[in-house]
Every structure is written in C-alpha cells, then in structure tokens.
Length: 208
Image (tube, rainbow, N blue to C red):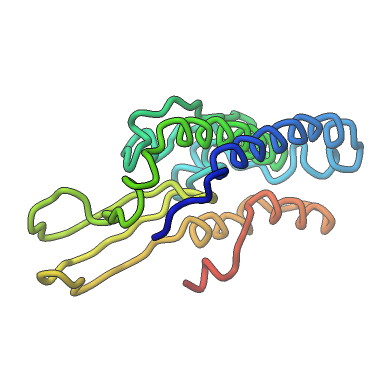
C-alpha cells in the first residue's frame, strides 16, 4: 500500500543474520537434552504409507519421507525463480518433525534474502495488485494450492463473474491433527504433549 522505509532492506538483512546466528545454537541445546530426546526420538511414528493415506502435508508429511512442497510442485508468485531445498526425513517420529521444521527455518532465511535481492523499487511495488485467481480466463472452477507454514492449503472456488459463487478452504492443520489418535497408541501420557507439539496444531485454523 505504501512506500517501504528507506532502510527496510538493510534492516531485513540484519534480521536474517540475527536469526541465522541464533538458530544455529538450537541443535547444541536440544540434541544434548536427554529429556527432549527421550520425548521425541521414536515417539509418535507416522510411517510413509500412513502419511500418504491420512492426507497429511507440510513438515508432517516431509518428516515421513515424502518430498512434496507446493512452492516447487505448483509454483506461484516468485517461487519458480527461487532456489531452495526441501528438507525431509524418513523416520517419521516427533524428532524428525522437529528437525524438518528446524531446517526449513534456515531455508526460509535463504528465501527471504533472495526475495530482498529481487524486490523491485518501491515505486514499482506500491499499489501492485495481488492476484489470487491467476491467469485463467473465465474459469469454471478455480483450485489454488499454497504452501502454508503447517502444510498445503487449498482454495476451491466456483466463480460467478467477479464474485465467488462457492468457496471452500482446506487447512493443513485440520488434516494433520486427525493422525493424533493413530500415532499415539500405547504411549506414555507424557509423550502425548510432544507428539501434539510436533504436529504444530493451531486450533483457530481448524475452526476456520
């Protein structure tokens, strides 16, 4: 909407440097913590086949060995011109889900830096429309995929001229949460909290 502050780029780069330096300390703290390792390693295992059958997405899916990311598979915005890795693990336990998210934070820093480098001048950005629907001309049905922090979000629309006649939103949290009873069988009560945390549930997103 408005011009960015003159020092926006330098401040953004400084923030990525700050985050990167502190994120590198996480493995030293967590991987040497006996309680953390006991409550995440081999806990809440979601095998690859089950991850597919239950329809999970995002870090939960990638921690079970599936290299799937909407930013790469269905590129939108500027993602087709960006270079980034898709961290995965094959273990499928709570620790793997933590590790995938940790590596994705480092990848996010790289993506932000690429975006800053490619950002147009302020005069070209202000007032730029954000296209949700895409380039289709009068489509009968619109299906957009977006890689959200917790997985793949879907936007399904049936348009009626310029307004949606019907719209449906599919949130990744709702789908990921349904595996909780499945991966929590025969566990200790204390493990339930780490398993739930590894799914990264946001209740407001489930309610939509």
